[in-house]
Each structure stands twice: as structure tokens, then as C-alpha cells.
Image (cartoon, rainbow, N blue to C red; front, side, top):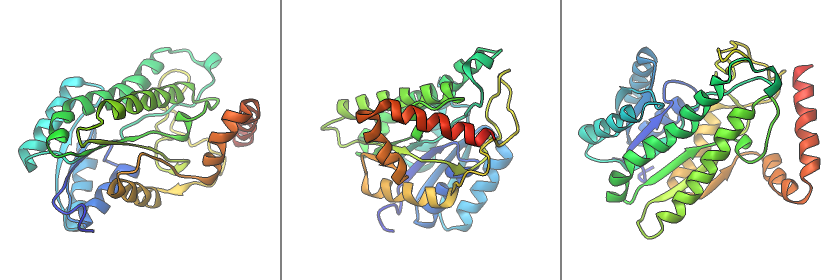
Length: 268
């Protein structure tokens, strides 16, 4: 628990789900948490939870798709706590549509701007402060960042982009003391699918997982916290996904069939 005491952690997408639960866990270990998201009311609720857990917290309303807003977020973190030790790029939006059903191609741009470019913007502006403290960058990716999944093509593309960016950044940062950790959760019980973009680029408001078993957000956050404390290079959270990485290398066609069958099952 002493590892995180007094450390400053910036978390995007902190107003609900994984980001919220991670923030509360970190606050309980004495970390200073900087909460970033677009919803002011939700941020204040999470801030109160963090303070009740024993940590210090500030809430900064931020749209990560805006590069200047990301710069101001890091500036505010440094003003509040003197520096940045960990940046958790957690903000994200998903989708639920086949490519041939999409009527508004703008949804692909929105997915890339929030999921990928938002992480790039935040990381770029945090890097000078992270280097000063030999800190850690965390990229919250997804199992779709490891393999394609039907009906979430744009989401998968944004997560693949994250993997390429952060794997490259890790090499660039060798010798600086800054580490990069990529975390790949599986299906987690959050509202990301309720807010997923549909064929017209608008949130569907529906969870189409067909009763699929999901990890709860608290368990996912606990795994992430352990990875942060250990500065792990990559975390793939499910045993099936870890096997899937090797199946993709050895029998990619088989993995495609498995993914297609899983989606058909969900839609039924």
C-alpha cells in the first residue's frame, strides 16, 4: 500500500466504471487522484468517494478529444499536486454495428479521436512531468486491440492503434525511467456498451451482450492497480484471451470463426 502513497495519478474516463473504481482504490492507498471526464456532476460524485476513501482528489472536466483540454488537464494536475507520477489513459467509447450497416461514417472519426488521439494528446502533455518523476503511462486497451471482432470494427481499430503507439513509445522511453503498461480487459460490467455508437453515430442505449458473463469493474480495477504497482509491461486479463493470442499466430482462421460464432450467439 505504501507504493502509491503520495503519488499523483491522472485518470481519464474517471466518472464511472473502471476509471471510477480504480480512482477509489488508489485514493484508499493514499494517492492523489486527478479525475478527468466530461460529466461534471459524475466527477464530483467520484471525487467525494475518493476523499471518503482517504485520498486527495481534484476533478477536471475534460474532453480528451480536444488537445488543448488535455494540456490544461496536466497543467491542473501539476498545480494541484506538484507533478505527475502515473497517467491512466482510460477514456473510451465503443460501437455496435456492422460496417455495411453504418450510415454515418463520422462515428469512426469520433472513435479514433476519443480512444486513440485522446490517449496520444494526454500522454504527450504528461511526458515532461512523468520523466521528471520516472513515472508510468498506462494505456487501457481491450481484447479487441489484440484481434478483430465483428460489429466493433472502429473500436477495434482504435485499440489496435493504441497498441502500436504505446509499444513504440515504450521503446523510445528506454533509459528515461518512464515505463509503459498496456492493459487489456475483457468484458467488464460498465456502461460502455450502453453508450456505444450505433449505425447513425448516436448512442444505442442498449446492452447487446446477450447475457455474456462479465467481470465486475471493481475486480478489473484491482488487477489494474496491481499492474500499476508492479509496472507490468502488458496485462491480458482473461485466460481465454491469453490463449487467443497464440491461436491468432498459429491458426488465425480459427480465431476468426470463434469470434464470429460468439457474436452470433450474443445476437440470438
